[in-house]
Image (cartoon, rainbow, N blue to C red; front, side, top):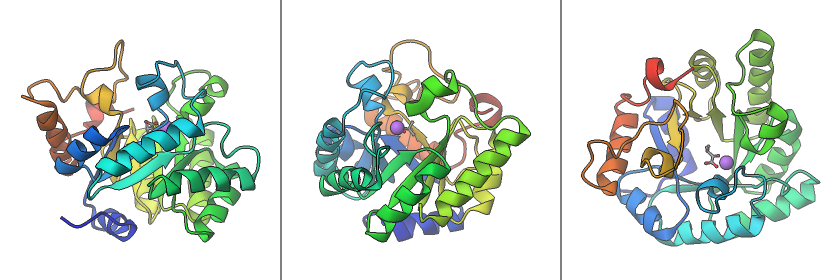
Length: 265
Ligand code: KIV
Ligand code: NA
């Protein structure tokens, strides 16, 4: 296996080869996921919820993100590493965004991810021009869940769908080379995947995206409490964690996960 590159990910999108992405927060799981064939390891700020026990991702510090990115980078062999810019690390100014992104990049991330629409486009352009690849994140953006009024499907009505599409185009034009779409109707995600020439990675965004992402603890059925409908328990019927993650990769590649009638909106 060759290391996953940006070129390879863009090619997979163009060819319709599905990209399997999972969240990852430490070295042991980085090696395990890598060996199971996961293409992209996401050091998500969801570590605030699953590792730190917070109720939102808002309190997660840049220092925590750097720490976990370094852990994942040490365990990774072939996969592409995306690390989240946490809340309050790219909001105040472009200089602040650069410092934050550079810290994650130096810790071993290949790409940084940030949440939000048009207002982030100048930040995206600034980082990309200086050599840090960027993944955008639209739809349900957990850092702004207070403003959104809860974990609800986004882009449902026509006006919201038009706005989301406009933001996606603006971010792609600013140089974003990947887009995560969270909790948006499957039809809208399918349209954007067709329109954009960058990979669109869905979570609760239907089966037609270029790839899929889940929080690892959710798909391993480790997270306590109620799970969103887009999560599938891959431990059910698996003999080991390795087996569950390999099955996730297989099902994403074979387009048997997600199913639009079960896991989508
Ligand atoms: O932090 C995270 O896990 C994420 C995914 C849900 C896309 O941003
Ligand atoms: Na995140």
